[in-house]
Amino acid sequence: MLEQLGLDRTTEAVYRAMLSHPQDDAEALAQRLGITEEALREAWDRLSRLSLVQYAADRLAEAPAALRAVSPEVGLEHLLAKREAEFALESRRVAGTRAAARQLIAEYGDQRPDGAQVSVEHLAGVDEVRARLADLTENVRTEVMVFAPGGAQTEANMEASRPLNERLLGRGVTMRTIYLDSVRNNTASETHATWLTELGGQVRTVPVLPLRMTIVDRTTAVLPVDSEDSGEGAVALTGRGTLTALCTLFEMVWENARPLGQAPCREEGGLDHQEAATLRLLAEGHTDEGIAKRLGVSHRTARRIATVLMDRLGARSRFEAGARAVQRGWLPLDA
Image (cartoon, rainbow, N blue to C red; front, side):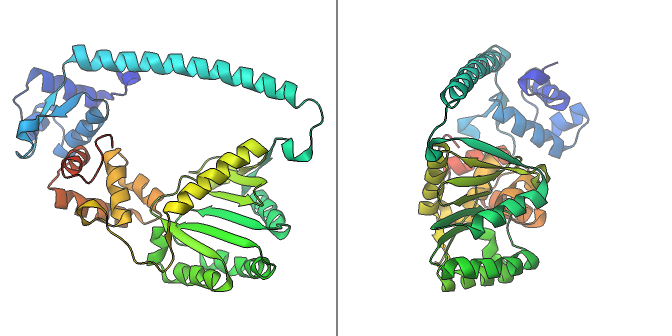
């Protein structure tokens, strides 16, 4: 009944049971609903993201369930208002996009200098993307900037890229590449990255990258159509405004990235960058699979990192881990 507000059947049943039986603990609630405690805690995570449950501040030290349901008058009204606002905002965005598109069509209907023209070239499939990237990098004049998510690189890809990288760096082209921190755990990938730096390339790493991206000479950017499915192809974008924004994004990430060879530093709570990123993803409700993709690690590694963090926090659910991390100052209040 409440799917449009983000509650599936199990989550709605848990919420109703918490309202009807506020004194039930996790075991009693699970038995009452005929579900496992793991399924119950997953429902709690969803309810917490919807602000339909909250911790009793004076009971956080208790284990395991110092949770109470937010009254429907407050919680559901808030969700309804939020959905209505989202629909209204989306309608305004569509109208704004339509107006902007019409203005762009009118503005660029006439001939413009090459540097001012905007174009979007669709590249269908992996082979077409690779061919376009090869053409761009063969003809690059000054600079290549790359976001390279996905974790460890394959031996075949690294071997195939070496001749081109040697030619570009030999011509004095500036090459800056940002990998995920996880490549530091793969000997072959780290060896390749070290080889690049020895030739004059610049390599840094971050825990999480926003997308896969290659920018050539600050005039053309190649981005995936779907970051989760490379088979969907990519787009090659040109245009001063678009490229300025993408170059700014790259520079921001580069500024906060860690140079290859630099020792890892620790954040609040003694967390390294990868652990801190995992904790933020946990608090946002990502699954182990989602965390693994974003960190470029195996599903098993993501689960191990998440389990260690939850153990350190004494938490039995992802929501509880987020709440305790905020209490300890490991995450900001709005995480």
